[in-house]
Image (cartoon, rainbow, N blue to C red; front, side, top):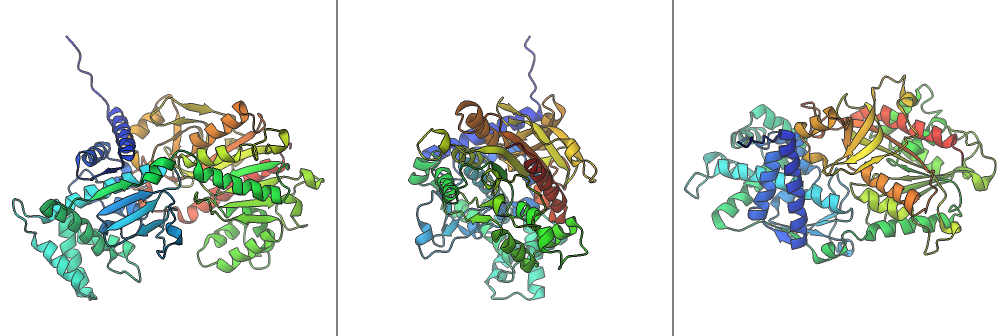
Length: 562
């Protein structure tokens, strides 16, 4: 008698992620799909089976509000009004009369073509497509929930709450009373309390569009309702140029070539180079802020100076630090390649006396280090950019065309599986979700480097996930509790390490003994309810770990043997 094989929730979730990615790649190759067609249903069913933590109550009848905010911050404003969504390559929209719409939490250019169509430029690789399609699938699921609530069964009529919401939005301006009545009707449609609805209303309201939340719910319901009643289908398409160009490193190669030309122009190609993937402020501030702001912030500790610089209203202080940096060897290269990855290059030979917080002791200018800082890549884009950057300059394979890369450091935010926001993760290996691919390495950073600062520090394996919005507790508990000993999750580690290893161990385009430093700080804990990315940002909690990691990387560079 055969035994019944029972799959665990972690296995079911892994299968659901695999189905989503296979489906998304198939749809991309096909060129289009309809969210309410067979392919769209496959995506929705997989996401409902997965039930990621970041999407909260996606599988329940009531509307998921925190997940909605999370998704809207990563998609262009107005997308809920569009029946047609077209994913394109960089196809020249920038020279048109249209102004790009850039989502608050994703650096991608989007263009509202007309009342019904939104075009989204994909210049950061497949991870960008997966991210968008996952968020759109969430929106379609929530849209259908609203449709089912407002449509009276077996008729084409809608419930009274929907009629009242529609009437309210026809008014040019809502009084306090009108607004509250509209929110009460909306709460009934969404299956949420008035208190919950009021909180989300406030979070989404802007000066120019105070009723944004009501309009979003209306349009999500309206398009789903029209599709149900009239058969006017929504559609997602992928442009021919996007399908032709994707995977060919077009933007990464352009980005790397611009950088190498700049290094050549400033005679920096043969100097010892230290690459850091980080944000565009922590290295600059760590090098110059303390001495630059000693008059304005004389009573501040170093951490308080960095917190002050992080405050939105301290533009003058930030500009002063930037000006000093530019007068002391910092070169800024704003991205024009389409990667959306800006660059800062610090020539330590041009640092003035008593202006930098770190002492670079090498006396010969031609041997003084160059610190190269690149903004964060996104998912698979990390491989594309670093792989292209580490190739020889030009077509020659002679030693003078090779970059003299001494170290590569990756600092980033990641989800932590034990601990809380702001705690540190020091990886000893990366594994790639959904595969057996694993990348152990010698990390020049260790837990001892960060002791004594009141932060919890975890050492172990990091898992590079296919998308942070596709993780649930079952998968993450398996990673954490199994012999993989996973301490956190992020989206770029495997891709960076794959490029570093191929350049140093196989292609020999950089030295084989290149030093590698990885350190992450926790942006969220997806195993704790209320601590996922959908619960909000880090605020000032991220300042301390950001600058602590930056400091340790810079000290290792100062003490490195070039």
